[in-house]
Amino acid sequence: MNVRARSVLAAGLALCLGLLLSGCSRIDRDQAQICVAVATAIAPEGARVSIDSVEPLSGVAHALRVLFTAGDGGPRFFVDCGFSGGPLEAGRTDLAAVRGYDGMMPDRRFFLLKRWFIDEPGAVAAAVRETDWTPPNAAILPLDLPKSVGFALQQLTNTLNIAALYAPLALAYALIYGLIGRINMAFGEIAMIGAFGAIFGIETAIGARLPGLGLALGMALVVALSLAALWGWFVGRAVVLPLAAAPSRPFIVATFGLALALSEGLRLSQGSRDIWLQPILGTPITLAGGPFPVMVTEMRLLIILGAALILPAVLILMKRSAFGRAWRAVADDALMARLSGVDPVAVTGLTFVLASALAGLAGAVLALSYGGMTYTMGLMIGLKALLASLVGGAGSLMGAILGAILIAVLETGWSAYFDASQRDIVVLGVITILFLLRPNGLLGRGRTIEEGRIIRLS
Image (cartoon, rainbow, N blue to C red; front, top):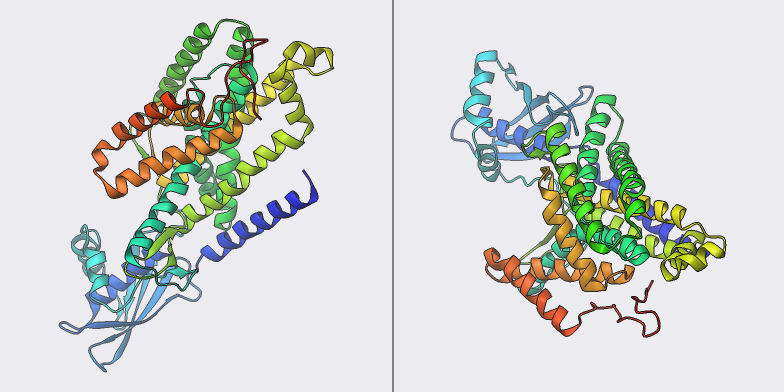
């Protein structure tokens, strides 16, 4: 990697870190909304509440103070709200105590407030709308775009978030197919191992009381990538290498059976119910204003920026590094690579570790961005990423990323402008037409006349 590329990557990482640190507001958005709703509940009856400020309560952990005015030019009041936990903790939105301008709220009144007001679906949001207060919201570009432009830009941000999920997994397929000409059908389940690993990392960070969201997210990524890479190494040693010289059918059957085994293992170890992660860095950021404001959460923006750095870094690694040269040598001619001092077995093992880590990264994106997962999701995510890899050109690394972006554009665009229930039918139809027009994919090539094998493009 040259000096310029390193400088670009370092600047991008600094930007992501700055965004993450700036996103960690002193006020939790959900806690602030609950406390504002409490202010409307304890205000004098019939008086309209005007919120003056929402600030952390000095000297008390997980507590906020809301200063408000009741009525036009009325007296000023305050309410203090204590919660059972902070960001990343289970009791983040569990109201634990309330102290108002007339003292500590009695237990009986506090119970009624929670049971018949705070815990009622939609009650908090309705109370907040009655005030002149809006939840904390960061802004980047002070632009007012036309409605159609704002709507299209919003769909673009949604597309990039979906592409950040598909692209690493499609790249994993391309790395293995470009090396040995085989499709590993278990990458979707390895991605789900990464998703569950990210959840485990977050829970570990909570238990260890790590300070700051940065460390917690770092823990989630480390666990997700480590578990996925470990399983990738095992799959490579136990399944891929013994079947590398076999016909493609036994390989596909073996990896598909492995996918079923991994899926069932996740069901037995993690349960069959959906697992949900509480929102992290969920404060919306206004990219541009206007009749249709363009909004993206801090987490999704961080994921998009991270993918924009990691995916080019992988491409640069495969093009400039010694491992990348060895990968290309084995992909072109394993026998000649062995005669030249390159160990194809070692290269294959390292490729499976890298590809599985990318699959684990896709799983971590799924867990952190969407928050919900189950053991059955690996099959569908894996198939869509496989289609993205094939659309881009089997074995082409750049083609895999372009295919992921194409599928993300089709899914998001159709859902935004047309009937979302027909989305998958349309996407598959477009892919079928594309294969008819370009059987080898966007960046794929035919077979060589001399050897009758696929030319690698990366």
